[in-house]
Amino acid sequence: MKGHILITGAGGYIGSNAVEYFMKEGFSVTGTVRNNIAERCLKSGAELRKADLCDFASLEALFDRRYDYVIHIAALASDTGREEKFRITNFEAVKHLAALAMKHEVKRFVYLSTADVYGLHDFHGETEEELSFDRSVTNFYPKYKIKSEEFLQQTLVPERFSCVRPCVVYGNGDTTITPRAVAFLKSSPFVIHFGKWHGQNRWPLAHVENVCRALHGAMVLPEAGGKGVTVLDSRFTTLSSYYRELAAQYLPDKKIREITLPVWTIRGLAWFSSVFSGEKPLFDPTLYALDTITSNLDLSNQRMLKFFRAIGKEEYKGQL
Image 1 (cartoon, one colour):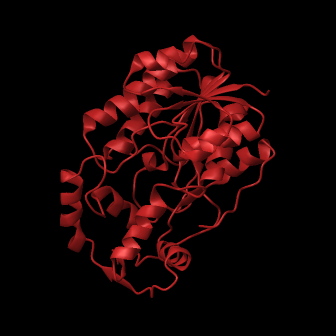
Image 2 (image 1 turned 90 degrees about the vertical axis):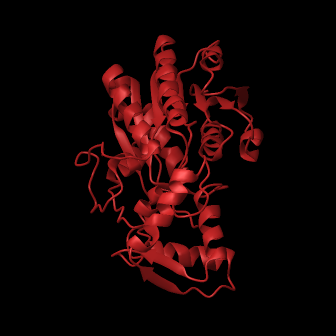
Image 3 (image 1 turned 90 degrees about the horizontal axis):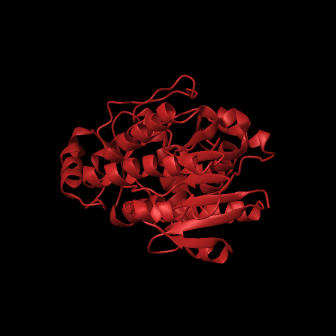
């Protein structure tokens, strides 16, 4: 075995793909699960253990054995919800788990963050060296991802941690963005774009297999220590072409008609959905989703490609 990895959130979408990936790569994997468990996780052969991010005692109990690495994927991932839940789940739990990893001499703590730490506005191919955290964000999801990354930077020595920042993740059993987009296409007679880009802005797709390969590089490469890596497919996909490809695959009989409206026409409804939703949005778009679909999220993926070459991998070029 190449080493023993603890992967949190193994029952979820990204986590189950990561468990399957690292098992195939020859690592021993212990994955944490809470309630529902993805089928690929059950079939992977990994050891599964119950844990809850809000129950710190359950996290401490995981360290009754030695791990070479910890990959922390589990999180509350939502456009909406109460700030206190995000603070505990996506910040306090990160601090506690990172401290446990260091106490038990884990070689590296890999944190799954998000590219949204850079903010939601127009980009033009900036690299990680050129980017910085957007501390003006108001959505609780990127807000506490930023706080967690800052904690790791301030508390851990660089060689003991790294951060992986995926864009919009899809592929291999996607239970998040694809079903949401298909539901929109089913319910709307038009593909509706908002704002100046008219759907020609980049939709920043990151195949889950590339997320797993980035986690691999972030975990084992000396040059990844203390760094964050953006995960973004090289293929340039506009928001308009994304909807058209989805429709061709899932709704082949649907005629796609596109219109563009001013952002102000939807912002009030987006505010209502954001304010009055629980952990699942009442309807789309929320304010967070609106900022996403009206921005040109065209980031650089050169560090990701360097990591892939260093671990002997190529970029996975999957289809929707």
